[in-house]
Structure formats: C-alpha cells, structure tokens
Length: 236
Image (cartoon, rainbow, N blue to C red; front, top):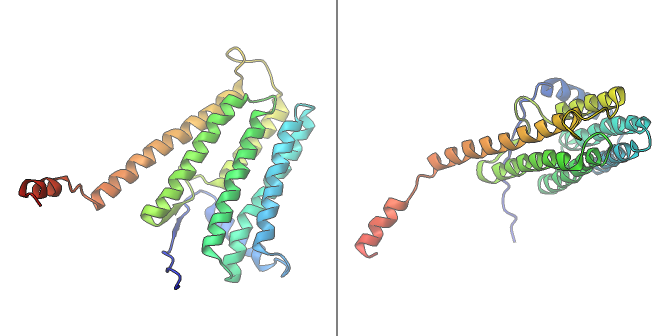
C-alpha cells in the first residue's frame, strides 16, 4: 500500500530570540559528534525535565536544591532544542515519528516542571495546575492548527519555549533570593500571584487564538445552511 504524501507543515516562530538561537543551534549541530543521534538528545531533554522536577521537590529540604532545577532547565533546553535541529541539519528527518515523539515528550516535560513547582514550598499546587492547564490548552491549539491550517505555531506574544525557560530560571533565582516569605493575601504569596497570572494569560491567549482561528476557518468554509434549506424545500 502506498504511503500517503505528508502535507508540509509551516513552522511559525516569531519569538524574540529565534534568530540568535537558530544561529547557535546550527553552530552546535555542525560540531555535534557523529555518534550523537536526535533520539539521544530527546532523551537528554527528558533527563533535564526530571532534574527540574527533582530540584523543585527537593527544595522542601533546602533552597540549595533549586540550583539543580536551574541546571535542569539548561539541560532540557539543550536536548529539546537540538534534537529536531540536528535531524534537519543532517537531513535525516522522520517527520511523523519526530513530530509524535517530540510533542509527547514536551507534554510530559511540561507536566514535570509545573507539577514540580507546585510541589515546592514556594507555589501552591492548585495555582501551578492553572498554569499547566493554560500551557496544555495552547499546545492543543497548536496541534489543531497543524491539522486544519498546516501551521505549527511555536510562539505567542513574541515568546516561545526558550523565553519561557529564561523566565522560569529567573523565577527560581527569585525563590533562592527571597525565600518563601509571608503570604500577601493569607496563604497566597508573590510567587503564587506570578504563576497564577501566567496561567491566566495562557488561558486568555488560548481563548483569543481559538476565536481568531475559528473566524479564519469560517471565512474559508462559509456556512452551507442556506444550501441545505433550499434542498429541503425542494424535497431533495
């Protein structure tokens, strides 16, 4: 049986660091040892995510564990950013396999990071789960856009995964610098407010992007209700 031709996916990446990061990744890929494979880099990215999770959970024993979380972000960036880049650089892409594995690992990695934050003494789990819901909703929108538009949107508000990691590293450094601190509103502290605001923003972005995409599709596929009513009136 002949394999169906794959529809090209247009990658839309408009984050602030995109160009500089692309030059850096190309430089890294050109110097990557031959024995390193894209799959091994995907595995390395997941190791980084588990490091982040362990660092946040371990911070219940002392804030020194937060340095492990920040190191994990660097490891996770390296693995997650270079796996697909290396495949494209060497022209050994496996589009369906790579797409499936990469985004499956992204979902698990994000869950580990955000749940880890929620299990730390700095952010309540309920607030962290709001942020996780927002991120996963935007991910769902991106995956649906691939199916209906042939576009994979990798950034929102000029920010992508790399900018998000930098923000989380800064948040973790703030945790080290300021500690848990007293609650600003009862048991809710500044870190809760920040993470909750990020989650709320992500959910609002999902809602807005859903409306924009639905309008675009509605214009491309006008309603056929009047056509159906005419057929019904004729008894067709």
